[in-house]
Image (cartoon, rainbow, N blue to C red; front, side):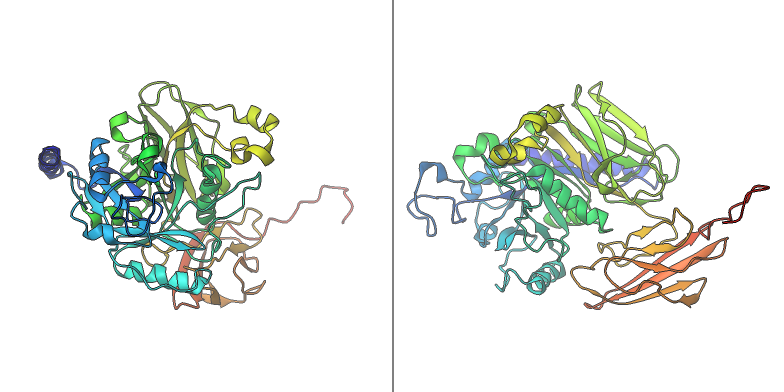
Length: 499
């Protein structure tokens, strides 16, 4: 009955949306926010017991009794979720189980791939060939293969920090292979090393931001990592909930929304009335804020953070380097918004909402070697957004979904600095720089970090950089500068000796 009710509700929403879109301006975006969980295990996983007929698990402890596929979908429906991804350890049998996609909940096929760290293979119902899990080339091939099938490659819970060291990466390949999304929120935020879990949430967010700082457009994801009935109350499906803006309520629509970075996360499922936060931009200055996370807008575009159901919390906005864009803003009412503009040199921005959780006092008295991430991480975050990006309108980048080379400005007006990064794990093999259509010599050589060219005369210049990568990808980045030449000569005062 619940499935029929949800189907009728979805049909009604679709009809109403069609009526609204028929009369709305052309800039209106078609789609809807869908709530779900992208990391749930069933009894097909080796560490979840499914009874005497379970062929890959034993009853070592009553706490390991897990969910069947049908019960997992029923539980997700009871929590108000629209979609659910069953991602068992190296096992895809859930996708062909009769309970997959039941109870009116959209099924997203996939599995959790055990590499040197864990990766989510989302949007697939087949296992990919095994290889050397420590080989960046093999993992790159995996990522390329699942993308070719319309799926996406996600790095799961990348940081397993059990001490006070924030860079103890569980994902041992670091930044060698670019994912489509990073699971920066795994289970409840109050699960921190060393107990009851080893996923350091703030450090995972910093790892995700590391991709953004490198100029890559990598989406934000999360999941409960639910395994057992015994822990479902605190770590069941929807804890946290990933909200995906999808053009169609289908697996393909959800995967595409993830790929485009159109996600937010709430700490509880819809039935718990969890707070939500949105980050939007007014691309054309008409006051409508039609752009959302995952989109790219020009520097200086007006921004808006909207918070729902979180009165009494604090809104924090982070930008390049993970720095706070401004002091935390108190959320003073259930339907709250804060408008702002960031400095023109910023390349990305995200937002989060949470309670003040005595972080500074904890950091001053907490023995890090004993309590690990509890000493340095925020544990009361209730919602966060993926990133929204900034880029000059004249900049031309690579294919959709590929990383955008970050281009540094020249604040000292002495030279241009182009920061080059590995494109999908492949090294840069050739770089060419053109100024006003003429090729210029690279002053500091070709590498993966920076290419600087000689100073230019004052005035407007068009600078184009072309980088070719070992995997055949070719990047073209173009910018126009009005005043980025040598600094004006210093004026000597009368009577001042020459230097």
